[in-house]
Amino acid sequence: MLDIIQSDFFQRALLGGILIGLTAPLIGIFLVLRRLSMIGDTLSHVTIAGVALGFLIEVYPLAAGLVFAVVASFAIEKLRKAYKSYAELSIAIIMSGGIALASLFFTLGMGYNTDVMSYLFGSIYTLDTMDLYMVGGVTLVVVVVVGLLFKEFFLLSFEEDAASVSGLPVKMMNMLITVLTALVVSTAIKIVGALLVSALLTIPVAISLLLAKSFRSSIVLSVIISEIAVIMGLILAGVFNLAPGATIVLLLIALLTVTLVGKKGLAT
Image (cartoon, rainbow, N blue to C red):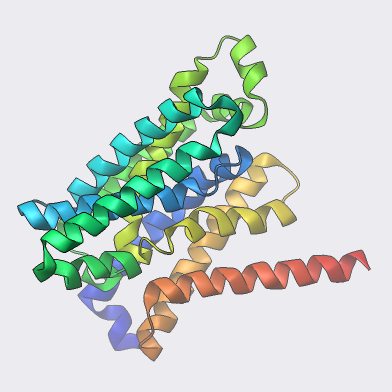
C-alpha cells in the first residue's frame, strides 16, 4: 500500500482527484438547487464528442472537450430561454446532439476508440502534468468566481425572480454557472469518467442537504464528503486493483445510503 501511495502516478491522481473533489460539489450545489442535476450528464456526453474530435484531428483531447462543453453550455442557456416552460428540453436536445457527434467521431476514427473509452470510464492514473495544470486552472477559476459571487449565486438558486427584481443580471449569471459547470465536467471526465461525472456533482450535495442546517454548512459538508470519497476511493482502488472512478462513486452511494438509513432511524 505504501509503495502505491508513494508512486508518482498515484500522487498525480490524488492531486487531480482532490481538486475535482473540491470544484464538483462547489458548483454542483447550485445545479441541484436550480433543478439542473442532469446537466452534468449532458455536458459530459458533449465533452466526449470533443475528446473524440481531438483524437481525430490530433489536438489535446481534454482541451477539445472543454471547448465543446463551453459551447454546449451557451446552447443550453439559449434553449432554456426559448422553452421557458419546458427548460428540461434544452438538456435533452443537447445531450442527443452530443451523443450523435460522439458516435460520428467514433466511426470516423476507429483506431483511437480505446483511448476515448478511457474518458468514458475515467483514467485518473494516467493524468499527466498538462492534465493537472488544466484541472488546477479550472479549480482556481471556480473557487474565485464562486467566492466573489456567492451571494448572487445563492439568491439566483433560491429565487430567480427576486434576483431579477433586485437588479442582478440574471441571464449573465445563469450563463456563468452553466459555463463553470462545463469547465468542471470537461476536466473531471478523465478522473471519474463521463458516465460517472454527474455523481460527483450531485451525490455529495444530496448527502449534505440531509445533514446540514444552513446553506453555507451544506457547501462545506458536501466538499468534505466529496474529498473523503475521492481519497478513500483512490486508496481502495489502488490497493485492490479496482476501477478508481467507479470506486469513488460507489463510496458516495454507500455514504448516501448510510445517511438515509441513519436519518430514518433517528426519525422513528
